[in-house]
Length: 98
Image (tube, rainbow, N blue to C red; front, side, top):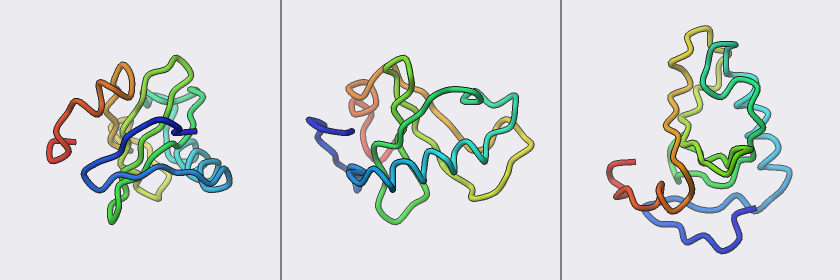
């Protein structure tokens, strides 16, 4: 899943496939039809310790940092999502700004 990635700023890899599947299913449950991630194939690869922030690998190699809400959303702004071209681009952002 997240092999070879170096994590910082309280982020850590999601190594358990069952956990990755559960968080990916939660994201699918939350996004409405007009959300930027609606219909996308995602895999949870990282989580921020103490927060509801997750990093998902997308089907095209990009990554999405998502703040899960644990609710079914109707507003496409939620769950809050920022997409980066790849893991390196995400990691280039200082942890305090992610």
